[in-house]
Length: 477
Image (cartoon, rainbow, N blue to C red; front, side, top):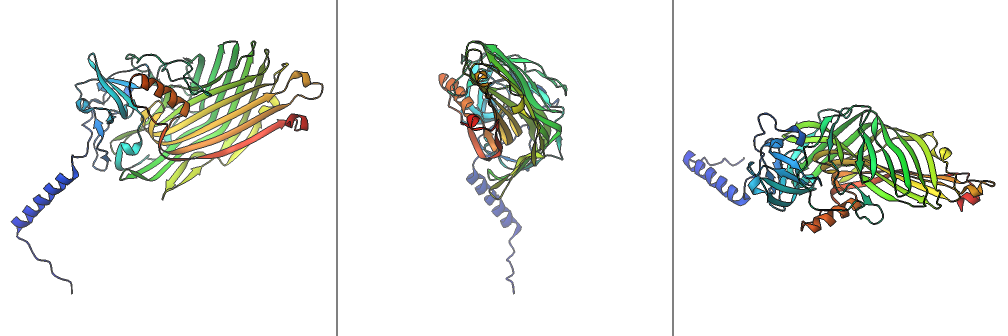
């Protein structure tokens, strides 16, 4: 027979309850941070949506919420790292190095530096892992999120928008801390066109997203001319995601980008001086689709891009030209549960137009070129590639070579090395060369360096193949 519990006098029970609450409050430290009430008018949406409080979400104690949403932002520095905000905004006085600022869905990150600058408060932000912002919460998209009509956020021309792929250094140089820029350009992007912009000597026209994610780029300098287009073809692209965090640990995560249809590469390069380049260019522009607030957290699905070109001209009159297309079926993404990842990969890769067949390049020397293209899809918080949350990045590397025209009486060798890779996870991942450039700048202004990655993730080789024509001994040697 179960023992019958003793009944306590109501006054005694109430006293015990109050005592336990007081003890619990003393042992747990400060209360969990909570977002302030968002602006009644929604604030300035050009800088992102303000967070809102929700009882089902617990934030990390280092998070400092700054009130006013986008209305508290006065500008973004030319390097796109420093946010200039109203020092009178609620919570602004609590910002300090090492804290995590959360102002809007785009203005969120680890505080690397904070200082008064005239009438503004200048806050330099670095990347932050999503679990360093959120301790507990479950977030999921309400059905597929269409990526056909994104909002374009232009980051201007930051110093880090070019780096040398070999040395990992800055191709365009650093410079002093940028002054506050004008407000970022914000507009709806036409589905079939983009706008040309200058990035580190390249003229780049990025496109996204109804028919694909890609960029057309040209270069003319130092005796080298390049023109190319890289496109991840898509049809009615959508995104789905699910993220569960408990005790600052990811329990379950899913990200799926649907509508992947193919890959198209077009490239032409030439030199009249025998010079070569090897550059990586992170395009400082986001194509973003807000997902509204999920439990008060302003998530967005964002696409960003990086292009790279490496030439290998062995003669003064070096040149090469080629174009090819492949079809892809299925989706890109990943799933994570019980400590294990599973990648969602395209189920087919079929040749449409042979890029090897198209290679031309009459020259007295052997010529080559490598096109490096990366499209990153993220669901989370942050801006311009420094985004915390779920990510899936598809990287294409196409290496082309053509033999010397002097061998034409026997044969002219042509080859293509195609590689397709998928990186995925929860957290953030930034190219190592780009991190080196940014950290060199931060060191000049006595600011702590940022890390190349944080969180959990994995990578898979989707496809790797060498196509050699003709497949003869002389071409294989």
